[in-house]
Length: 90
Picture 1 (cartoon, rainbow, N blue to C red):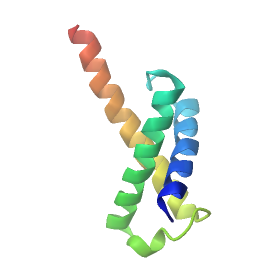
Picture 2: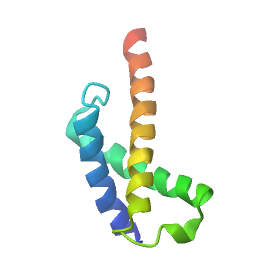
Picture 3: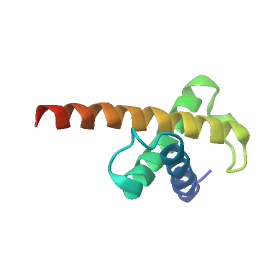
Picture 4: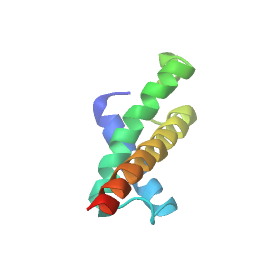
């Protein structure tokens, strides 16, 4: 799957993450969409380590979606921890 496919997948993942954990993902929809794109890329990297690069062959592959969503939650969680600490220190 090409770079444009990962961006589109990331935008969809960002919307899913925002809908599932709205209280934890701060910064509004644009931040959530950016985190979704980064999360999809991280999910692709994780799946490359876990099941091999050949498993991420296409946009409509279920494994691609699962790992992209997992990556989105990981990135959103890390972002929430970072921004939560910054807000409490300020």
